[in-house]
Image 1 (cartoon, rainbow, N blue to C red):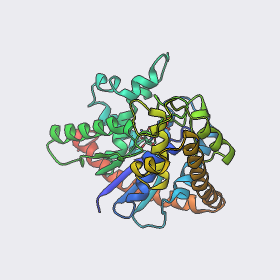
Image 2 (cartoon, rainbow, N blue to C red; image 1 turned 135 degrees about the horizontal axis):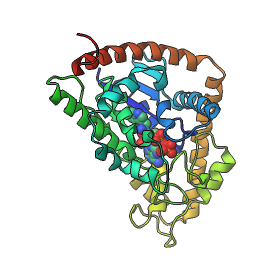
Image 3 (tube, rainbow, N blue to C red; image 1 turned 180 degrees about the horizontal axis):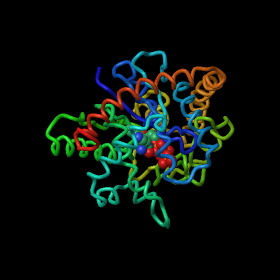
Image 4 (cartoon, rainbow, N blue to C red; image 1 turned 135 degrees about the vertical axis):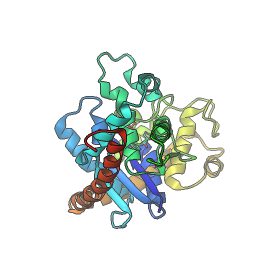
Length: 330
Ligand code: ATP
Ligand code: LTN
């Protein structure tokens, strides 16, 4: 079985954007590939985090993965926490020493996250290399993510190729980004020029998977659209409305064309109301599963198994790479 790997930062509570770009794809592919799904908690500390909130977000994230449909009973599903495996950071150091600094400061996400910020951490610059080591340690072939992470997966590809060439061997599998055709970038409901983000300062444009029904309705009904009143998918000229159609598609399984057809002739209010109903219904099921999962021992059992399994793989790969670059004794 080929390997698929992805992670979602526990830098806040998960959003419908995270569902669309990350979790949904894992669920679609979990029976086809050996799946490595982890919580990149070390990535979250590129910006300061409250330790208690971080612990809580880690557990909540795993609870939500399972509540959304990640099947921990599959033998080929491995759920784990990045910081419970010391090899990620060790491999990252080796790869950092092969990455020109300029390659990292040119990354879109770095530019975005460091804009107008003084004293950002060095980790914010080097974190895509840690992400590359997350991927390369396990020889993952497929990396499902939203569009914002495509450039980081490309860095992982480049680093794998660079290492294989420099040390003359097939040390690392070359990974490929897997980006969904629809829903790769869910936009902020209030400011559709931005992507919906779990750590946005204004939460009015973000729907969290743990939001209550009242908040979900309020956020959808208050979403920014345009004033021409025509239901049409046009991301450039009608980004707000196109975003609502996209979210509808992600949660209903219908194509955007079918949705445009369904709401043709009606006002934006009808579409918003139907979308709010749909989201409330789907998210209620997730929240119901979540309550049951959080009250059970399922999460710790899965994480313990995942830690054992993935540490063994990572150790073997790291030892090979360590010797290959000349560290330690012969
Ligand atoms: P942060 O605000 O802390 O940067 P985030 O909400 O942007 O977090 P990440 O943890 O960086 O989310 O991303 C986890 C996964 O969810 C990644 O695969 C990412 O591409 C995907 N993702 C994040 N936001 C969106 C979005 N708005 N639309 C589609 N996919 C998304
Ligand atoms: N950097 C990603 C989360 C992440 C990830 C990964 C995704 C860390 N390591 C490996 C895929 C593969 C983010 O910030 N969204």
